[in-house]
Length: 321
Image (cartoon, rainbow, N blue to C red):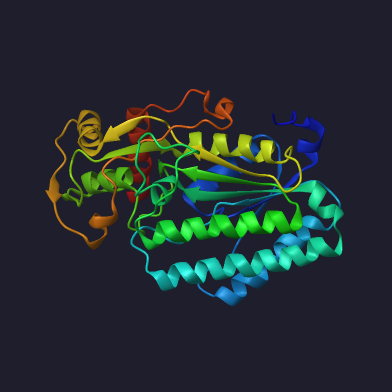
């Protein structure tokens, strides 16, 4: 059982969000600030690994310095399924170096560990891509198919080992397919946003997997609300505890159904081109998820898929204008 969340400590807790400029990170910052929390955003020069380590290490040391309760919320991630092994290794190297420097700061003042907690975002789709027995949950053995999934598992291990060494509790959130306003369309990800953008630009969408491929789509604001609750629960965990939590809508949707929903919203049949891509071989046909850990987090009204698609469409439309 998790100890009750201390509301007084929560009000005093300082939060550092790494990845605040991303889809999930931006929504998490908005949710924390709407609740009156003390939030710092990490502005990181990700193109320069050495500078990234310097900036992040400095920000986290500042987080620890005044004796207040603290939460590190790591929701950054430059990699996608199509990312190469070198880029993923560079990202892991930055994380490992930051954790090493922060661990040294905690070792210099062990009381800092008792005041802190960490939440780190991972990928359910990447880590469970080769697993069997849908729906997958926290008890399912992770079997990645692509370097991206193996890299996510390696990042999880970095945080697990760091927790064992420092005593700081860690929660790992494995997310299903996130979508919504604010998605970075420069990355090869975000089918909902890509379909909406193609419609607005009057061009066909390329689909590289069978139309009956099943995915779990979680609207970003719902994911942020779940994340904030998990961050609060992390703060109440015993020292050195690591919790894995699947963050998902727990509803499977085929790509065909997704296209049909968009058609109902825009009153026009989307133009779809079936193509091929080198990542198709590492795409699982069925990625449905469930959760048996902290089920209270999942008991909430989620944004219906048509409403989420409509909000994404309106956001993209406003951006194009």
